[in-house]
Image 1: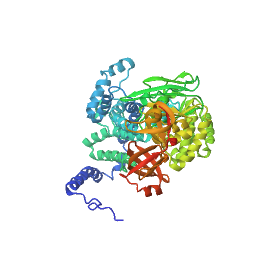
Image 2: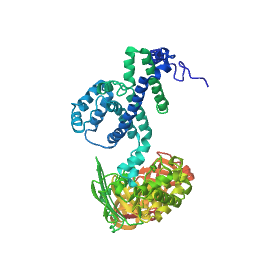
Image 3: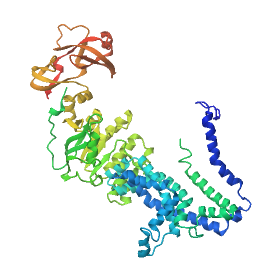
Image 4: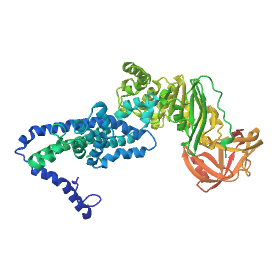
Length: 269
Length: 361
């Protein structure tokens, strides 16, 4: 068998007006990453990556992204189920509202969170005066900001999987005496587990890279609210080498995520 | 030719035990209105063409489709407002819907578990059911590893494991290939005969219905057009659909003594002496075809017809004819060749009065 060729296939070669922009597009996406690797201060890398600040930021990022993903799972999966399985008036509107944080500039999300949960916020003032709970500029605030931005990814992904899953399995479970919740727990959940996992990874990756909502709602306090992306941005001002090193760590994490998802996406026909 | 509206089809008187239902489901322009009664131990088949509403009726019995009217009682208990998980009903779905992530054993144990059995109890019950259906060694297999016949039996075991008072089977043999079908049909007949409560199955296959069920309810366009025993329905079909299923020529007309007037132009001579609206039926092999008008034939019915189609039917050739009456005739390949039959050819068709069967409409 001949190896597949770029210009000659069964259906003829790729026409130049398509091939040229395609190659430019590819270069556009890959070049910055290559540049990052080229300019990386490989020699001083071990030193840069073992500093307390880097470790603090990395640890905080991982903990907060994981917590935000957990929050998204606990409230996002039921929300996805509601959207996919229950007919109610205004369902389209609810879906649009859920999707909004996907397209909203994260900084706006951060401001909105301040208005809701800040010390003088719509809900925040009661949290403060009744329970003495303050959310902004705390680690919990980071988790909230990340969950706000990341959860829609999970909801959309899980809802899509639910829609593709055959609802008649739930009917079969019902005829066997399962309540709707039992059917969800013992039949639907195992069936859509791969979709939930993919949604969780997406949400986790989005939370890990979250910048705008976090810095607006939680601020930038090393050890408390300074996550990796914030640290990268700050380092770039006074220590570019450190910024590159931190960026490489995030790049490595992204590649690991992609590798974890390759069965779902890379092999998609 | 027939008008189902005029046939009154009262269901048998309901007993205290068993099923007593009038299922009314309206959805857009479609209206299902079917009365069903059955005593414990009965096997009822809902037979009808695609889109007749059979599956909707089954889903209404299971509680998966709400009734918009009528009633539903099982063993004297009102069920029409019960959610599906509260009904003592077991369902074998057309494509079985075995849970793909659970083993055959856990699929069967699912029902008992939902009814409050501990995990160990549920599994013990499931194992007993699998054993009973001859699947003891397949308990640990995932559904995708099972053959069609095995999956069907696991689905039956799963439905029976909740000890339902009403067992519903949706096209139980449709997903099987012809060879497996024969075996599974025989097994299913055996298991249904053992089942002590009411069983209702839905099928579009008259053979399945006649082999598996004691009572047939024929549904067309959301309404019952005929009900009775398989033998009764095979002998006295009341609609074209059933006549076609059981392979009979069927006509509806007005009887005056031994003559039945079909339209204005044609009549059929019969042996029965009847008056008023009747059906006349005769099998395709009662029809003889002739090149020239037969003289001195004893056949009382003679029509000049045109051949519209021919197809092999077993070892015979079935000829479709039009003319005074639409007709199907069966003849041997040799006879067809000798007559030089081809679409468009004109022939004489003869049927002896003794081979027709007339009955009140």
